[in-house]
Image (cartoon, rainbow, N blue to C red; front, side, top):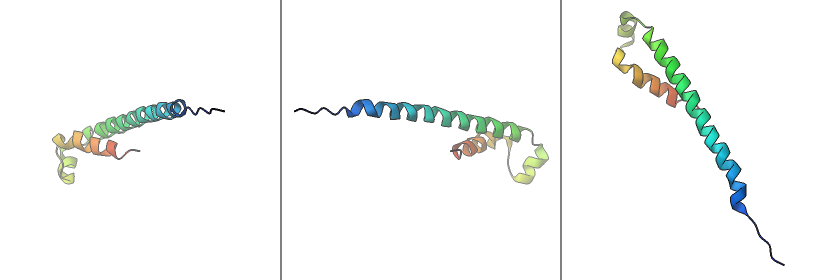
Length: 70
């Protein structure tokens, strides 16, 4: 008697789920990036001087905040 085991078909749903998980993660990261950027733009020049930041740092700071999102 011959047996056939198809492992490729069973891996397909996991790959699809991983694909959608990756998309969901990128969407969450983008949301955190946009929120961080908006909050940073509300700071005054005096607030930025107190924090030791300049407006040129905003994108880097927002990107770092988004990368920490899981």
